[in-house]
Image 1 (tube, rainbow, N blue to C red):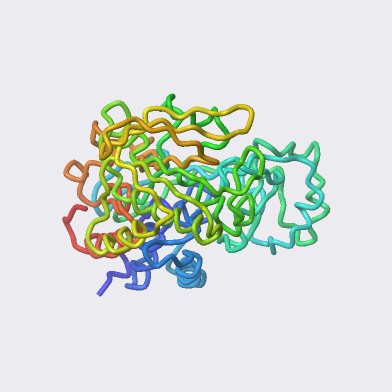
Image 2 (image 1 turned 135 degrees about the vertical axis):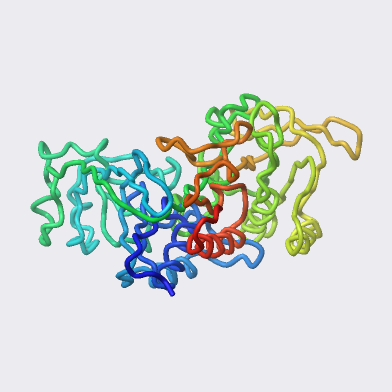
Length: 419
């Protein structure tokens, strides 16, 4: 039985792990405050085209969770909000949080009239800069909460103001101010998630320099019907259909100069993305450059299925460099081929770098202990009443994140336990 007088649990991060923790705790009778720095919930899972190994869309599962949370009076959702500091101890924490100006309020019906009149544009971060939106925008057709947001950096504010009279529901207030608030909670769950490693730090791969070298998260958006090309897999430089593609594994991972660890999901993500190309273009060819293939347990069958495709070429060897043919935009990959004992060179339409998972600002502004080597939250050094879940703890996939979030909620309800 949950103590109804107990202070709420704070869940920091509104991705798949944070949402799962929030709904599971609330449905067990616990009040929850869910904090998310973006205007909408969903995190990086919402950016995916499909899950592996079933290759189904994540939108179905996310919508179920949104439905569970939508009318749940035990969950208070605070979007565009970040934690500034934490003090206190187990059962009696105080969080100071800062919320960005909420220039679009809950009166919004997502009718799109504000977008029609907005003259300013911004780079679309949801599509990793591969398209633009207006300064007032909606991230995704199924985004939740269901209201628009305004990018303060792109909006000219009251000096423009064209969106205000266009909104018949009076949902826009361009004079809204930033707010700071103190919240008291009994325990804290960190579900701060991850970001792809910045592949531009690996200069010999040409990421950020050559348009047709993209990372694995960009490939998910390119392949998605809600992405910059509406699901048509074409290369960024000229819109050419991608019939000859390379995937470069361990792009920065297992490298003492970059990420020293294996992110556990990169091999599977590349195999999944290989199916996107093979299904869309039956005459396409895929080459996967790898050091080792890591597809543990039940995922091994998925890997074997991909490897049996005669149009998928598996090359064991490290990629030495990636160059661009300026005349054609083609990408030239030079690599070692260990099994054949030689250097090989491949001309590709596009290259996808399988970049690793890096913790998404774990510990930022809160003084949290992190591992010096990898930056993930150090579980054995957390104070009682503080917990972590999902990729804030270590690299993992969606299935394990869900299970971990549920088990973390159980631990928060036991006095004196740590994550």
